[in-house]
Image 1 (cartoon, rainbow, N blue to C red):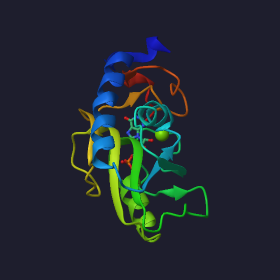
Image 2: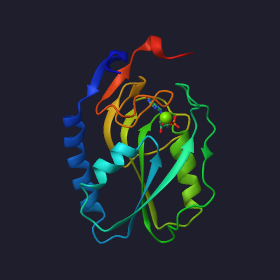
Image 3: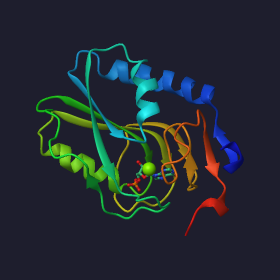
Amino acid sequence: MQDDLERVLFHETTILSRLDEIAAQISKDYSRKELTVIAVLNGSLMFMADLLRRIPLPLNLDCLSVASYHGKAQTSGEVIFKQIALPDVQDRHILILDDILDSGNTLAAIREKLETARPRTIKVCVLLSKKKQRARKVDADYIGFEIEDEFVVGYGLDYDERYRNLPYIGVLRHELIKG
Ligand code: IMP
Ligand code: MG
């Protein structure tokens, strides 16, 4: 798998030490609040597991599963929710966790949907945020790393469902991306 990468962007140790910092900030911001973390599967799996183990607060955890990519490297714009029932978040403080903020379509759709369940507050935490013009405006409250507009894989992020199990994040070689 490593041969498929153009270069490594963030080694595992770099990711984990950044998670120490974000977790400390989240723990401070949510002390004495009824926190519900909503993780967006599958991409945020590793991020969720490593981040939440660093937050020593009582919290609820729910996962949402959405699809918008369909195996390609460009967003389709359409976000499909794979479950019918939303978690019970009324009056709770929601923190949405996602792997990467790209066009903004996914997080904007999730945020909109969760607002209908009448939470007290909603914040967004992403591991990666691409520096680019977004199709939809989404403000992430916590960002692990800002990256250039390149296609990255590893540490939960996939290309056509591959590479999620790489322990680090790297840029996928351009010639492996099908139009
Ligand atoms: P958005 O809706 O365009 O913001 O895209 C969000 C979703 O697209 C993320 O949760 C990822 O699953 C996927 N995605 C966007 N950019 C990348 C990338 O560089 N590598 C892998 N997946 C990506
Ligand atoms: Mg994906």
